[in-house]
Length: 303
Ligand code: UTP
Image (tube, rainbow, N blue to C red; front, side, top):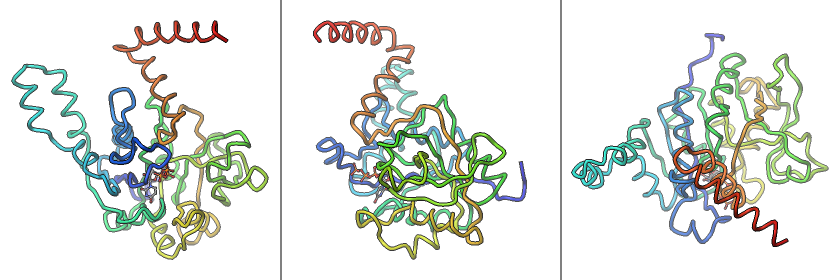
């Protein structure tokens, strides 16, 4: 690994979106707080940052930010009640999220898009490369992605994005990357990006997913980026500019991810994440799997 690139220590988690796909659940609660089995989605994301060595976490929050801040703070009332009962296991669960990382918060007044949310992190991040983890994108902890992206950034400098191969009829839901192969099978060089293209316009089947390691030059570009698709300041538009001109912030590489990932802001994916993670849990899994098997068998018989 090259020593010439500054070490990455900060993670930025945008969690200020409106979450309209999940209404009415997200009317008064951020979608990032919806539980995946018994833990809010956002806690998995913070745990992922910490296990990649990033324990300085800045969360970009919007309206309804209280539950997010409270979840990563101490809850003395609950702790004292559980302590008095001698319920050490549940007490540990309460304390787990407040002991995880050094948390910081910044408010995105208006949800003007992901690019704008990332720009809100500029004063905290300063002039260092940093990671961005989308608060509603869940990467299975057994399929580490961020560590590999940090390794690639330390080797090549510049920025690194996460890519996943998707079916042509799915690409309009994502940003799509034009790529060239490199000597590493899981790493590509990114030469261009298009936000939510039609299957015909898409430069490849590689879709951009919610993990980034970015050069701070992205802030200068975002400051000048006009609202794009949907009237929002798009991170993809700024990344396209980085990819088009290496002299600005170094090259853009992509790590091709083949592991398990769930978009917990999408209702179908959210349900799949819960079923899969519940089946795999040692405490809940055996009973839940047995019930699921019976349920599926009955369903099949009725068809
Ligand atoms: P999404 O594209 O999923 O948008 O944001 P959204 O508004 O949250 O959800 P829908 O489409 O209305 O259901 C991707 C990530 O970027 C954050 C979101 O919180 C989510 O983690 N985001 C998005 C912001 O922080 N600010 C924004 O202005 C937009």
